[in-house]
Image (cartoon, rainbow, N blue to C red; front, side, top):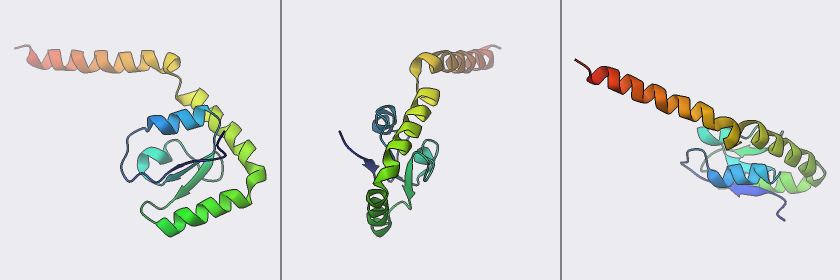
Length: 112
């Protein structure tokens, strides 16, 4: 198994591969784009680096490898985030309500 998930993505919504890494209990080293910052807290369940900064990415990898003893703890924190926020069985009703509200608002605008 991998020690660390790395994604230098410049643009992303909620990344499925990031969710999978969190669920697998991997610390995540990701660019600091808004979608990633919703899931990764620097130093808690992974590391953030400035988007587009290759030197910062390299430094973050070195920092993670120098702190290997923390990776297991960070991995557990990653798994907790996934269990709390990325569980479709828990989120399905919220998503369904959002769709229903959107449809109801659209139908209300269509009525004369």
